[in-house]
Length: 182
Image 1 (cartoon, rainbow, N blue to C red):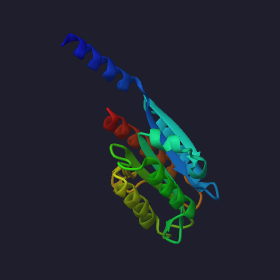
Image 2: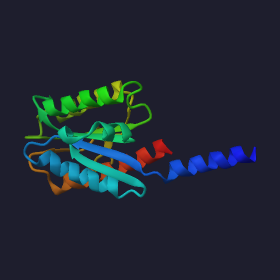
Image 3: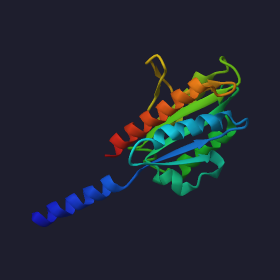
């Protein structure tokens, strides 16, 4: 019995010591989504015990998808939905993870658009539905007034206020992912 207890404690210590891995994959054409992604990364990286990988979605390797404890997806809005590159990334996620896909992992989304009425909510919901179909637990954002959101967004150039919300979202996402993992 003592050996079993020691073995279990050793295994638990190894799980607790391993960093929580968060993948932030984004597609950016104008640099706006990249700027928001960098702010999200800064927030997530501020949480102790978290390792963050920030990459353009086209450059993400299959093993980075599989090993991530949480995945954040950033996309520009194209015709009221995610960009084609973001859709290709989501399809790759499903291919490399296979069933049970994102079971036990966290997921979230952020987006940028040219103007305030370009379909940011619809875009985030389309990404969220794909993540839900892959069994991810969705973590949303909180805006400056304390209301829950689908995740951060920016219209036009990324303002300082949007960066503050994105950093807060990254930190919130990382804390939720740590709690899920442990």
